Image 1 (cartoon, rainbow, N blue to C red):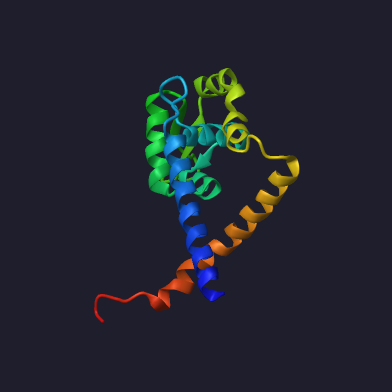
Image 2 (cartoon, one colour):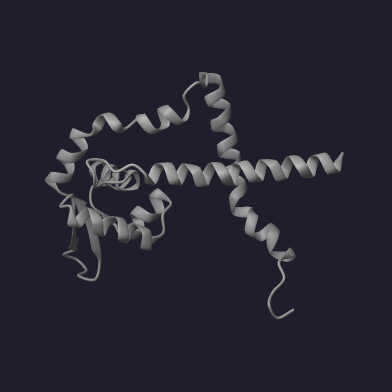
Length: 159
């Protein structure tokens, strides 16, 4: 029985990791108007909805590293869709804000909003989607415990 349980966990782990990798690969193939990726669309939407943000705030809200946010914003700045500015209160603080061109870009491409998740969850009933959401939330809640649970079993180089 335990052997079957271990096999099932290994299979779940394998397909979960495969699904995450494939999701990222497919997501990264998309370039809206040939220049803006889906993660950059998330940044534009957040700036449009919440106003100017610090890179750290964007990173925290969107679950990206600050380095990834910086790289994504660099491309958006070059495209003229966002701009960086120092705050008047503290010149060391840099905020990112959407430009008029960025707002126009979002409006022009508004139809994309539901396409990615629509395709991803195509063929599932509303009830199945609710069950998947519940599973995703439970997995998300378990994720912070992974490193703590595995750490005692990891050999250090000194041993």
